[in-house]
Length: 484
Image (cartoon, rainbow, N blue to C red):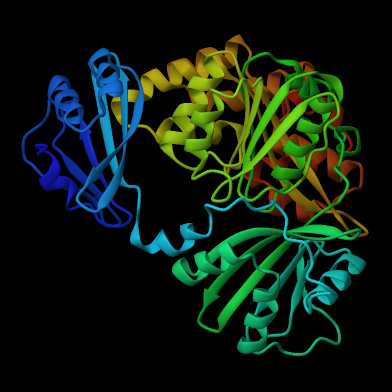
Protein backbone atom coordinates (compact mmCIF):
# COMPACT_ATOMS: atom_id res chain seq x y z
CA UNK A 1 0.00 0.00 0.00
CA UNK A 2 1.32 3.43 -0.97
CA UNK A 3 1.82 6.16 1.63
CA UNK A 4 -0.33 8.44 -0.54
CA UNK A 5 -3.33 6.08 -0.84
CA UNK A 6 -5.14 7.72 2.07
CA UNK A 7 -4.92 11.15 0.41
CA UNK A 8 -5.66 9.82 -3.08
CA UNK A 9 -8.89 8.22 -1.86
CA UNK A 10 -10.10 11.67 -0.80
CA UNK A 11 -9.75 13.23 -4.29
CA UNK A 12 -13.23 14.04 -5.59
CA UNK A 13 -14.57 14.97 -9.03
CA UNK A 14 -12.86 18.15 -10.29
CA UNK A 15 -10.13 18.11 -7.61
CA UNK A 16 -6.39 17.45 -7.77
CA UNK A 17 -3.74 16.52 -5.21
CA UNK A 18 -0.60 18.67 -5.40
CA UNK A 19 2.87 17.60 -4.21
CA UNK A 20 5.61 20.20 -4.61
CA UNK A 21 9.11 20.93 -3.34
CA UNK A 22 9.03 23.14 -0.23
CA UNK A 23 5.23 23.03 0.07
CA UNK A 24 2.71 21.05 2.09
CA UNK A 25 0.66 18.37 0.29
CA UNK A 26 -2.51 20.19 -0.80
CA UNK A 27 -5.84 19.57 -2.51
CA UNK A 28 -6.99 22.00 -5.20
CA UNK A 29 -10.79 22.30 -5.06
CA UNK A 30 -13.39 24.68 -6.49
CA UNK A 31 -13.09 26.70 -3.26
CA UNK A 32 -9.31 27.01 -3.45
CA UNK A 33 -6.22 25.24 -2.08
CA UNK A 34 -6.63 23.10 1.06
CA UNK A 35 -3.54 21.91 2.96
CA UNK A 36 -3.82 18.17 3.65
CA UNK A 37 -0.62 17.53 5.66
CA UNK A 38 1.10 20.33 7.56
CA UNK A 39 4.64 19.34 6.65
CA UNK A 40 6.52 20.73 3.62
CA UNK A 41 8.01 18.15 1.28
CA UNK A 42 11.55 17.95 -0.04
CA UNK A 43 12.24 17.13 -3.68
CA UNK A 44 13.43 13.64 -2.78
CA UNK A 45 10.25 13.04 -0.73
CA UNK A 46 8.02 14.06 -3.66
CA UNK A 47 9.94 11.77 -6.02
CA UNK A 48 9.91 8.88 -3.53
CA UNK A 49 6.16 9.17 -2.87
CA UNK A 50 5.33 9.22 -6.57
CA UNK A 51 7.77 6.36 -7.28
CA UNK A 52 5.59 4.17 -5.07
CA UNK A 53 2.74 4.77 -7.54
CA UNK A 54 4.72 4.63 -10.79
CA UNK A 55 5.03 1.55 -13.01
CA UNK A 56 8.54 0.12 -13.32
CA UNK A 57 9.20 1.77 -16.70
CA UNK A 58 8.51 5.23 -15.21
CA UNK A 59 10.47 5.01 -11.97
CA UNK A 60 13.74 5.98 -13.64
CA UNK A 61 12.08 9.15 -15.04
CA UNK A 62 11.27 10.29 -11.51
CA UNK A 63 14.73 9.36 -10.25
CA UNK A 64 16.41 11.32 -13.07
CA UNK A 65 14.05 14.32 -12.79
CA UNK A 66 12.45 13.86 -16.23
CA UNK A 67 8.91 14.93 -17.12
CA UNK A 68 6.64 11.87 -16.84
CA UNK A 69 2.96 10.95 -17.02
CA UNK A 70 1.42 7.66 -15.88
CA UNK A 71 -1.71 6.07 -14.47
CA UNK A 72 -2.44 4.59 -11.04
CA UNK A 73 -5.34 2.40 -9.95
CA UNK A 74 -6.63 2.36 -6.38
CA UNK A 75 -9.47 -0.04 -5.60
CA UNK A 76 -12.08 0.60 -8.31
CA UNK A 77 -10.82 4.06 -9.31
CA UNK A 78 -8.12 5.23 -11.72
CA UNK A 79 -5.94 8.33 -11.44
CA UNK A 80 -3.78 10.38 -13.81
CA UNK A 81 -0.36 11.46 -12.43
CA UNK A 82 1.91 14.13 -13.93
CA UNK A 83 5.48 14.61 -12.69
CA UNK A 84 7.40 17.79 -13.65
CA UNK A 85 10.91 18.88 -12.70
CA UNK A 86 12.85 22.14 -12.97
CA UNK A 87 16.33 21.67 -11.62
CA UNK A 88 15.97 20.92 -7.91
CA UNK A 89 12.26 21.81 -7.90
CA UNK A 90 9.80 18.97 -8.61
CA UNK A 91 6.02 18.86 -8.73
CA UNK A 92 3.41 16.09 -8.89
CA UNK A 93 -0.27 16.46 -9.78
CA UNK A 94 -2.76 13.63 -9.19
CA UNK A 95 -6.25 13.82 -10.69
CA UNK A 96 -9.09 11.31 -11.15
CA UNK A 97 -8.97 9.81 -14.64
CA UNK A 98 -12.36 8.09 -14.45
CA UNK A 99 -14.75 10.66 -13.03
CA UNK A 100 -18.22 9.24 -12.47
CA UNK A 101 -19.88 12.15 -14.22
CA UNK A 102 -18.07 11.20 -17.45
CA UNK A 103 -18.62 7.44 -17.45
CA UNK A 104 -21.77 7.50 -19.57
CA UNK A 105 -20.25 10.03 -21.92
CA UNK A 106 -17.14 7.92 -22.55
CA UNK A 107 -18.93 4.60 -23.14
CA UNK A 108 -19.87 5.55 -26.68
CA UNK A 109 -16.53 7.19 -27.43
CA UNK A 110 -14.61 3.91 -27.76
CA UNK A 111 -16.13 3.13 -31.14
CA UNK A 112 -14.68 4.97 -34.15
CA UNK A 113 -16.79 7.91 -35.28
CA UNK A 114 -16.43 10.46 -38.05
CA UNK A 115 -15.70 14.10 -37.38
CA UNK A 116 -18.91 15.24 -39.05
CA UNK A 117 -22.47 14.01 -38.55
CA UNK A 118 -24.17 13.78 -41.95
CA UNK A 119 -27.74 14.99 -42.30
CA UNK A 120 -30.34 12.26 -41.56
CA UNK A 121 -32.13 10.51 -44.43
CA UNK A 122 -34.16 13.40 -45.71
CA UNK A 123 -33.62 16.89 -44.29
CA UNK A 124 -33.56 17.24 -40.50
CA UNK A 125 -36.18 19.60 -39.10
CA UNK A 126 -33.48 22.05 -38.01
CA UNK A 127 -31.96 22.24 -41.50
CA UNK A 128 -34.46 24.90 -42.60
CA UNK A 129 -33.09 27.22 -39.91
CA UNK A 130 -29.54 26.62 -41.10
CA UNK A 131 -30.54 27.45 -44.69
CA UNK A 132 -32.14 30.73 -43.57
CA UNK A 133 -29.09 31.50 -41.47
CA UNK A 134 -26.72 31.04 -44.44
CA UNK A 135 -29.04 32.94 -46.79
CA UNK A 136 -29.12 35.93 -44.44
CA UNK A 137 -25.35 35.86 -43.93
CA UNK A 138 -25.43 35.14 -40.20
CA UNK A 139 -22.42 33.89 -38.26
CA UNK A 140 -24.31 32.18 -35.41
CA UNK A 141 -27.70 30.56 -34.76
CA UNK A 142 -28.99 30.71 -31.16
CA UNK A 143 -31.74 28.36 -30.01
CA UNK A 144 -33.33 28.66 -26.56
CA UNK A 145 -36.32 26.66 -25.35
CA UNK A 146 -39.57 28.68 -25.28
CA UNK A 147 -38.03 31.46 -27.39
CA UNK A 148 -37.95 32.29 -31.07
CA UNK A 149 -34.72 31.30 -32.85
CA UNK A 150 -32.21 34.14 -33.11
CA UNK A 151 -29.18 34.83 -35.31
CA UNK A 152 -26.12 37.06 -35.10
CA UNK A 153 -25.67 39.30 -38.13
CA UNK A 154 -22.65 41.63 -38.32
CA UNK A 155 -22.27 41.25 -34.56
CA UNK A 156 -25.90 42.05 -33.60
CA UNK A 157 -28.58 39.63 -32.39
CA UNK A 158 -31.93 39.45 -34.22
CA UNK A 159 -34.92 37.11 -34.41
CA UNK A 160 -35.48 35.14 -37.62
CA UNK A 161 -38.58 36.56 -39.30
CA UNK A 162 -41.56 34.25 -39.45
CA UNK A 163 -40.23 31.61 -37.04
CA UNK A 164 -42.41 30.58 -34.06
CA UNK A 165 -41.39 30.00 -30.45
CA UNK A 166 -39.77 26.58 -30.01
CA UNK A 167 -41.06 24.59 -27.04
CA UNK A 168 -38.66 22.64 -24.84
CA UNK A 169 -39.97 19.27 -26.09
CA UNK A 170 -39.68 20.30 -29.75
CA UNK A 171 -36.21 21.70 -29.11
CA UNK A 172 -34.99 18.41 -27.65
CA UNK A 173 -36.42 16.47 -30.61
CA UNK A 174 -34.79 18.84 -33.15
CA UNK A 175 -31.38 18.67 -31.50
CA UNK A 176 -31.38 14.94 -30.78
CA UNK A 177 -32.18 14.29 -34.44
CA UNK A 178 -28.72 15.57 -35.46
CA UNK A 179 -26.74 14.75 -32.29
CA UNK A 180 -24.40 11.71 -32.42
CA UNK A 181 -25.11 9.02 -29.86
CA UNK A 182 -21.90 9.61 -27.90
CA UNK A 183 -22.79 13.31 -27.64
CA UNK A 184 -26.28 12.43 -26.38
CA UNK A 185 -24.64 10.34 -23.67
CA UNK A 186 -22.27 13.16 -22.81
CA UNK A 187 -25.09 15.70 -22.68
CA UNK A 188 -27.20 13.50 -20.41
CA UNK A 189 -24.22 13.12 -18.07
CA UNK A 190 -22.79 16.65 -18.04
CA UNK A 191 -25.50 18.90 -19.61
CA UNK A 192 -22.97 20.21 -22.18
CA UNK A 193 -21.59 18.80 -25.40
CA UNK A 194 -19.91 19.97 -28.62
CA UNK A 195 -19.91 18.48 -32.11
CA UNK A 196 -19.69 19.53 -35.77
CA UNK A 197 -22.60 19.16 -38.22
CA UNK A 198 -22.60 19.49 -41.99
CA UNK A 199 -25.23 20.02 -44.66
CA UNK A 200 -23.54 18.94 -47.87
CA UNK A 201 -23.21 21.77 -50.34
CA UNK A 202 -24.29 24.39 -47.78
CA UNK A 203 -21.95 24.74 -44.79
CA UNK A 204 -20.45 23.11 -41.71
CA UNK A 205 -21.51 24.18 -38.23
CA UNK A 206 -19.83 23.99 -34.82
CA UNK A 207 -22.51 23.05 -32.29
CA UNK A 208 -22.64 23.58 -28.54
CA UNK A 209 -25.65 22.04 -26.77
CA UNK A 210 -26.38 23.15 -23.21
CA UNK A 211 -29.03 23.19 -20.49
CA UNK A 212 -30.41 26.37 -18.89
CA UNK A 213 -33.44 27.25 -16.78
CA UNK A 214 -35.66 27.19 -19.88
CA UNK A 215 -34.57 23.71 -20.93
CA UNK A 216 -32.24 22.51 -23.66
CA UNK A 217 -30.56 25.12 -25.87
CA UNK A 218 -27.88 25.36 -28.56
CA UNK A 219 -25.55 27.71 -30.41
CA UNK A 220 -24.32 26.91 -33.92
CA UNK A 221 -21.34 28.74 -35.44
CA UNK A 222 -21.19 28.70 -39.25
CA UNK A 223 -17.94 27.38 -40.69
CA UNK A 224 -17.59 28.11 -44.41
CA UNK A 225 -17.19 25.08 -46.68
CA UNK A 226 -14.33 26.84 -48.44
CA UNK A 227 -11.24 27.69 -46.43
CA UNK A 228 -10.60 31.43 -46.28
CA UNK A 229 -7.08 31.85 -47.63
CA UNK A 230 -4.35 34.00 -46.14
CA UNK A 231 -4.51 36.17 -49.25
CA UNK A 232 -8.23 36.82 -48.81
CA UNK A 233 -7.69 37.71 -45.15
CA UNK A 234 -4.97 40.15 -46.18
CA UNK A 235 -2.34 38.69 -43.84
CA UNK A 236 0.95 40.52 -44.15
CA UNK A 237 4.15 39.03 -45.60
CA UNK A 238 5.74 39.23 -42.13
CA UNK A 239 2.90 37.13 -40.65
CA UNK A 240 3.12 34.60 -43.49
CA UNK A 241 6.87 34.31 -42.89
CA UNK A 242 5.98 32.65 -39.56
CA UNK A 243 4.71 29.70 -41.62
CA UNK A 244 8.25 28.98 -42.82
CA UNK A 245 9.80 28.62 -39.35
CA UNK A 246 11.29 25.25 -38.43
CA UNK A 247 10.45 25.51 -34.74
CA UNK A 248 8.90 27.82 -32.19
CA UNK A 249 5.52 28.90 -30.81
CA UNK A 250 3.07 31.10 -32.72
CA UNK A 251 -0.11 32.24 -30.93
CA UNK A 252 -3.36 33.65 -32.31
CA UNK A 253 -5.33 35.26 -29.48
CA UNK A 254 -8.51 37.18 -28.87
CA UNK A 255 -11.90 36.94 -27.18
CA UNK A 256 -14.45 34.29 -28.11
CA UNK A 257 -15.83 34.92 -31.59
CA UNK A 258 -12.91 37.07 -32.73
CA UNK A 259 -12.00 34.92 -35.74
CA UNK A 260 -9.02 33.07 -34.22
CA UNK A 261 -9.99 29.78 -35.86
CA UNK A 262 -10.31 31.43 -39.28
CA UNK A 263 -6.86 33.02 -39.02
CA UNK A 264 -5.24 29.79 -37.83
CA UNK A 265 -6.98 27.87 -40.60
CA UNK A 266 -5.61 30.32 -43.18
CA UNK A 267 -2.06 29.87 -41.83
CA UNK A 268 -2.32 26.07 -41.92
CA UNK A 269 -3.75 26.22 -45.44
CA UNK A 270 -0.87 28.48 -46.53
CA UNK A 271 1.62 25.92 -45.20
CA UNK A 272 -0.37 23.15 -46.91
CA UNK A 273 0.07 24.95 -50.24
CA UNK A 274 3.72 25.95 -49.85
CA UNK A 275 5.58 23.31 -47.83
CA UNK A 276 5.85 19.49 -47.79
CA UNK A 277 5.43 18.58 -44.12
CA UNK A 278 3.40 16.54 -41.65
CA UNK A 279 0.84 18.61 -39.71
CA UNK A 280 -1.18 17.38 -36.72
CA UNK A 281 -4.12 19.45 -35.49
CA UNK A 282 -5.82 18.96 -32.10
CA UNK A 283 -9.23 20.61 -32.01
CA UNK A 284 -12.45 20.68 -29.98
CA UNK A 285 -14.32 20.13 -32.23
CA UNK A 286 -12.81 19.95 -35.72
CA UNK A 287 -14.00 23.01 -37.62
CA UNK A 288 -12.31 23.57 -40.98
CA UNK A 289 -11.43 20.37 -42.83
CA UNK A 290 -8.05 20.54 -44.61
CA UNK A 291 -7.71 18.44 -47.78
CA UNK A 292 -4.28 17.07 -48.67
CA UNK A 293 -2.32 19.47 -50.88
CA UNK A 294 1.44 19.58 -50.34
CA UNK A 295 1.23 18.41 -46.70
CA UNK A 296 -0.08 15.36 -44.89
CA UNK A 297 -2.57 16.65 -42.30
CA UNK A 298 -4.00 14.53 -39.45
CA UNK A 299 -6.89 16.25 -37.65
CA UNK A 300 -7.82 14.89 -34.20
CA UNK A 301 -10.89 15.84 -32.19
CA UNK A 302 -10.77 15.99 -28.38
CA UNK A 303 -13.24 13.56 -26.72
CA UNK A 304 -13.67 11.70 -30.02
CA UNK A 305 -10.16 10.75 -31.18
CA UNK A 306 -8.29 11.60 -27.98
CA UNK A 307 -9.01 12.25 -24.32
CA UNK A 308 -7.63 15.78 -23.99
CA UNK A 309 -5.42 18.42 -25.60
CA UNK A 310 -2.49 17.48 -23.38
CA UNK A 311 -2.86 13.75 -24.07
CA UNK A 312 -2.97 14.31 -27.83
CA UNK A 313 -0.08 16.78 -27.75
CA UNK A 314 2.07 14.34 -25.81
CA UNK A 315 1.19 11.49 -28.19
CA UNK A 316 1.90 13.69 -31.22
CA UNK A 317 5.59 13.74 -30.36
CA UNK A 318 5.69 10.04 -31.31
CA UNK A 319 3.86 10.63 -34.60
CA UNK A 320 6.71 12.31 -36.54
CA UNK A 321 5.12 15.77 -36.84
CA UNK A 322 6.73 18.90 -38.24
CA UNK A 323 3.94 21.27 -37.21
CA UNK A 324 1.26 21.01 -34.52
CA UNK A 325 -1.86 23.09 -34.04
CA UNK A 326 -3.37 23.15 -30.55
CA UNK A 327 -6.93 24.47 -30.71
CA UNK A 328 -6.89 25.72 -27.11
CA UNK A 329 -4.02 26.04 -24.64
CA UNK A 330 -6.46 25.94 -21.74
CA UNK A 331 -4.50 24.38 -18.86
CA UNK A 332 -1.04 24.35 -17.35
CA UNK A 333 -0.14 20.88 -18.60
CA UNK A 334 -1.05 21.69 -22.22
CA UNK A 335 0.88 24.98 -22.10
CA UNK A 336 3.89 23.24 -20.54
CA UNK A 337 4.01 20.49 -23.18
CA UNK A 338 3.48 23.02 -26.00
CA UNK A 339 6.44 25.08 -24.78
CA UNK A 340 8.66 22.02 -24.52
CA UNK A 341 7.54 20.89 -27.98
CA UNK A 342 8.33 24.30 -29.50
CA UNK A 343 11.78 24.20 -27.90
CA UNK A 344 12.63 20.75 -29.23
CA UNK A 345 12.40 21.33 -32.97
CA UNK A 346 8.70 21.63 -33.79
CA UNK A 347 6.55 24.54 -34.95
CA UNK A 348 3.50 24.88 -32.70
CA UNK A 349 0.46 27.04 -33.39
CA UNK A 350 -2.02 27.69 -30.59
CA UNK A 351 -4.75 29.99 -29.27
CA UNK A 352 -5.41 31.85 -26.03
CA UNK A 353 -8.27 34.08 -24.93
CA UNK A 354 -6.18 37.21 -24.39
CA UNK A 355 -6.78 40.65 -25.89
CA UNK A 356 -3.21 42.00 -26.37
CA UNK A 357 0.23 40.60 -27.15
CA UNK A 358 1.67 41.65 -23.78
CA UNK A 359 -1.22 40.12 -21.82
CA UNK A 360 -0.63 36.87 -23.74
CA UNK A 361 2.88 36.59 -22.31
CA UNK A 362 1.58 37.39 -18.81
CA UNK A 363 -1.21 34.80 -19.11
CA UNK A 364 1.23 32.03 -20.00
CA UNK A 365 3.69 32.90 -17.22
CA UNK A 366 0.95 33.34 -14.59
CA UNK A 367 -0.38 29.81 -15.18
CA UNK A 368 2.76 28.38 -13.59
CA UNK A 369 3.74 28.25 -9.89
CA UNK A 370 5.81 31.24 -8.74
CA UNK A 371 8.98 29.19 -8.40
CA UNK A 372 8.78 28.12 -12.07
CA UNK A 373 7.96 31.48 -13.61
CA UNK A 374 11.56 32.57 -14.16
CA UNK A 375 12.22 29.34 -16.07
CA UNK A 376 9.03 29.77 -18.14
CA UNK A 377 10.01 33.33 -19.06
CA UNK A 378 13.36 32.00 -20.29
CA UNK A 379 11.62 29.27 -22.30
CA UNK A 380 9.20 31.80 -23.80
CA UNK A 381 12.00 34.20 -24.65
CA UNK A 382 13.59 31.47 -26.73
CA UNK A 383 10.58 29.71 -28.23
CA UNK A 384 7.85 32.35 -28.74
CA UNK A 385 8.10 33.68 -32.30
CA UNK A 386 4.93 35.70 -32.82
CA UNK A 387 1.57 36.73 -31.36
CA UNK A 388 -1.43 37.84 -33.41
CA UNK A 389 -4.08 39.37 -31.11
CA UNK A 390 -7.28 40.19 -32.92
CA UNK A 391 -10.82 41.45 -32.47
CA UNK A 392 -13.72 41.53 -34.95
CA UNK A 393 -15.20 44.91 -35.87
CA UNK A 394 -18.47 45.80 -37.61
CA UNK A 395 -17.77 47.05 -41.13
CA UNK A 396 -19.49 50.12 -42.51
CA UNK A 397 -22.15 48.75 -44.85
CA UNK A 398 -22.35 45.33 -43.17
CA UNK A 399 -20.14 42.39 -42.38
CA UNK A 400 -17.14 42.20 -40.06
CA UNK A 401 -13.37 42.32 -40.34
CA UNK A 402 -10.48 41.74 -37.96
CA UNK A 403 -8.26 44.38 -36.39
CA UNK A 404 -4.96 42.77 -35.42
CA UNK A 405 -2.18 43.59 -33.00
CA UNK A 406 0.97 41.85 -34.21
CA UNK A 407 4.09 41.08 -32.18
CA UNK A 408 7.21 39.38 -33.49
CA UNK A 409 9.76 38.29 -30.92
CA UNK A 410 13.02 40.02 -31.88
CA UNK A 411 16.06 40.27 -29.54
CA UNK A 412 14.60 43.33 -27.77
CA UNK A 413 11.28 41.58 -27.05
CA UNK A 414 13.09 38.39 -26.06
CA UNK A 415 15.12 40.30 -23.45
CA UNK A 416 11.99 41.96 -22.04
CA UNK A 417 10.26 38.58 -21.68
CA UNK A 418 13.33 37.06 -20.00
CA UNK A 419 13.61 39.99 -17.57
CA UNK A 420 9.88 40.09 -16.81
CA UNK A 421 9.47 43.63 -18.23
CA UNK A 422 6.31 42.77 -20.13
CA UNK A 423 4.90 46.27 -19.69
CA UNK A 424 7.56 47.58 -22.10
CA UNK A 425 6.48 45.34 -25.00
CA UNK A 426 3.92 47.84 -26.42
CA UNK A 427 6.71 50.42 -26.74
CA UNK A 428 8.81 47.98 -28.76
CA UNK A 429 5.83 47.20 -31.03
CA UNK A 430 5.26 50.93 -31.49
CA UNK A 431 8.82 51.49 -32.65
CA UNK A 432 9.14 48.34 -34.80
CA UNK A 433 6.50 48.95 -37.46
CA UNK A 434 9.12 48.48 -40.17
CA UNK A 435 9.35 44.85 -39.01
CA UNK A 436 5.60 44.34 -39.49
CA UNK A 437 4.56 44.89 -35.87
CA UNK A 438 1.50 46.96 -35.05
CA UNK A 439 -0.45 47.93 -31.94
CA UNK A 440 -4.18 47.29 -31.83
CA UNK A 441 -4.95 51.03 -31.57
CA UNK A 442 -2.93 51.75 -34.69
CA UNK A 443 -4.70 48.94 -36.56
CA UNK A 444 -8.07 50.34 -35.49
CA UNK A 445 -7.06 53.86 -36.50
CA UNK A 446 -6.10 52.64 -39.97
CA UNK A 447 -9.49 50.99 -40.43
CA UNK A 448 -11.20 54.23 -39.41
CA UNK A 449 -9.11 56.35 -41.78
CA UNK A 450 -9.83 53.89 -44.61
CA UNK A 451 -13.54 54.28 -43.78
CA UNK A 452 -13.94 50.56 -43.16
CA UNK A 453 -15.23 51.00 -39.59
CA UNK A 454 -16.70 53.90 -37.63
CA UNK A 455 -14.71 55.76 -34.95
CA UNK A 456 -17.26 54.62 -32.37
CA UNK A 457 -16.75 50.96 -33.29
CA UNK A 458 -12.98 51.43 -33.03
CA UNK A 459 -13.24 52.90 -29.54
CA UNK A 460 -15.59 50.09 -28.43
CA UNK A 461 -13.11 47.45 -29.59
CA UNK A 462 -10.02 49.21 -28.24
CA UNK A 463 -8.36 47.92 -25.08
CA UNK A 464 -6.70 51.29 -24.41
CA UNK A 465 -9.51 53.69 -25.30
CA UNK A 466 -7.96 56.98 -24.10
CA UNK A 467 -4.97 56.54 -26.37
CA UNK A 468 -7.15 55.73 -29.37
CA UNK A 469 -9.37 58.77 -28.80
CA UNK A 470 -6.22 60.92 -28.86
CA UNK A 471 -5.12 59.25 -32.11
CA UNK A 472 -8.52 59.78 -33.68
CA UNK A 473 -8.21 63.52 -33.05
CA UNK A 474 -5.21 63.45 -35.34
CA UNK A 475 -7.10 61.66 -38.11
CA UNK A 476 -5.52 62.50 -41.45
CA UNK A 477 -1.92 62.30 -40.14
CA UNK A 478 -1.96 58.55 -39.75
CA UNK A 479 1.43 58.20 -41.49
CA UNK A 480 3.07 60.10 -38.63
CA UNK A 481 1.44 58.36 -35.72
CA UNK A 482 4.54 56.41 -34.68
CA UNK A 483 5.52 59.10 -32.23
CA UNK A 484 2.04 59.81 -30.94
